[in-house]
Image (cartoon, rainbow, N blue to C red; front, side):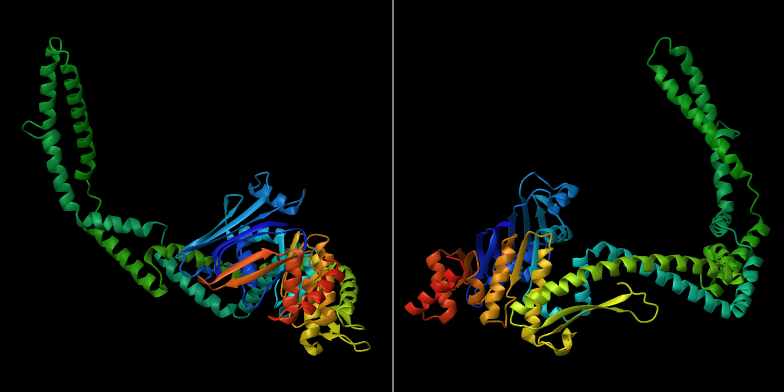
Length: 557
């Protein structure tokens, strides 16, 4: 459960500290006081996308952090252990928003990404927004709710991968079939291109080798002249060469070393120099005698490079790519020459993938039908208590058209409902009114929350558009949920707020800049707040008495 929450410089909040308790907590306050800002801050803390506009005006950063108390063997502890973030204490999440820079997240003082915050957040808190009933009209949302309740999450990832494999195989088979129909003309073109390149017979690396030899040939005279002149001065001159002089100097030093041992190192350096001169001279000799690139050889290289250039322009590739291009044409010819073999192999793979796909579909469908039966019964029971007596809720699984292969299985999930006895259930977007849809959405959320792994459930004004006895029934359901965990609900309804085990009041001050404040209400303060919710600004003794009676009847005093 959420133990405490701190919000600093976020939206209209300057500095807010809240200590939450278990069971059902109602957050009340006038419209615009900042109640939903608290939920926005929690969403950001748990990995939602953040914006610099959420930083309080005039500030450079905002910070949100919260402490969570975890029971033994909670999935969040397993996640923390796997990530190396369990410090053997309660879990603390923190997120810092900064202007001009990306936000920073922390889990138990370990740096964390938004994805990690989101993954852990899903194990800690379930948040149900005030507009959730509108998304309930979408079939993909309905399917997602059912699959989560059925425990199909991992299976849905698996079947999506299998679907991708089937699509890829079908596309490849289709391409090969189309290619087979037009292969004759393609074969002619490819064979012509291959014969043309084969006449040149390009080899891997030949282009670079030819360019290198061309550059060397262009400077051959200069190379031989320089090498000959250097060789003569170093080693083979008719006059004293550098090598001859070094030998004489070394010989003169030899008898003197006995009297001056320090000359030993000098002799060693001169000897190494003489050896290097001999080695350099030997390496110059092949260059001096190089007659490889005569005029005829150079002409051959020029002609060969010209052929490379001409053919490369025709095929719209670089000259050095011709050898690779020839191999590519040969491979394409092989595939065209015998596409049936590849098609047969791909068809076999497609059959195997399809068997796996429909096996997964069967498991998914079995899980869906099993949980759907229980959900229909539970949700119908709850909506009866929410003012839809005689109404019903149904979950239909409709087979997909065609081959039945979709990313989400071979059936469509459709929620249907009826608000009146004797009227057949229809899809939610057909006949259900806005008020009825809100109540059905609440019933679904209440039922699904029972199966939630998250110990904390937050409801943000889900009672919008509802009042009277229906509101009272909603409050009772939220209190019932709070007995199994922690429930926090933002509400404007008196009938909901009176059922809270605890009540916090959110207010907004504009005396010295806009600022949101929150405080836990004592019993007497609750009576006053409930009276305000009943009558508005003008609270009378009669209203206070009525508020006390409501709280007492709800068991909250």
